[in-house]
Length: 439
Image (cartoon, rainbow, N blue to C red; front, side, top):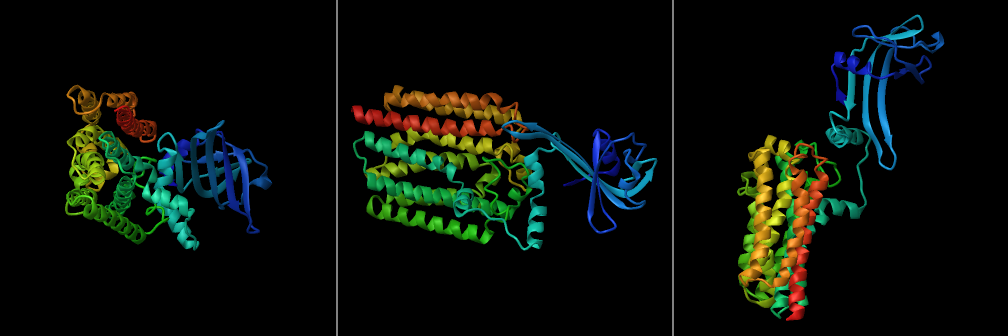
């Protein structure tokens, strides 16, 4: 519900052919009557004609709502808008006359539905608290949202790639690889959960009125589904799991994993937390490129084979770069909230044209690394399959500038960007596995 200036409300109301009048009758029961909209003099709303018995007594406080929706078969509705006014009733000649004293309204063409709903979250939570109720989801969906499980592909791909390189070298071991995956998944989920806590503390998620399935955080704290304390405890627990498994691998496979784990801890925790707050300093993308590329892939290879591999670092660099682009594009709808709360990401710092150009440059670099690998003898020729991911990169790049300022129109763009990383990574893994089978 958005407050409107009375003059603006009257002007908007004139565009509706009918209004619905409501008031409390003398017997204490509500009365609701629909009526056609008549010509309005300045500052006044006139509805009717109505039979005299249907008109409210003079001076009765009435509410009049004017609304419009358009059904879209198979989709729901669009063109949603309404104007709601209140004021004392006057009647003359079968016409109801109201000079509004207050008004509210909403127009989907000015404020998208999801933004409108988001702007009213605080009001909704206040209402539920006064009613003694609490928003609830099933345990599965609460965990699904709070941890942002679908984004685990960012971890699975580099860990799978590290294992595939090890397989091509003839040193793959399922048990050690699964322990690497467990540690990496726990670390990633801890980062996701802790990031929500940090963004709740900074106010950036609270200020964000355009969240999407790909941006704006999980929203479970803002919606009252999970408390900040529970999220913080969950993050600590996940970090403990990741650290314990990582320590086991370091003690049994290679102590060099301690260095990789320490770097990962600093990058993951410092992504949003003080004193580093990398993302606030415009360093979020480099941190993600390192952490979700070479660090995870080379760490996996080291744990599985007990040796370090520069080939794995090279092969996983494109995966890290494309993962950083997921963060990069997903921050575009967040930039007003991030800017307002001091979260100075690259998207906040750069103009739109540079952001779009930056996306293209990083994509070119990522796919150039894939193309050059076999030519210089670093990676197998089958890894050229990874170039197939460029098709989705093009689908992301083409509409990026056009939809830059339309958060919800960006959703398919963000989706294709995630697929770019996923498809490229899977094709690289497949390339290595084919090479291993044919060797």
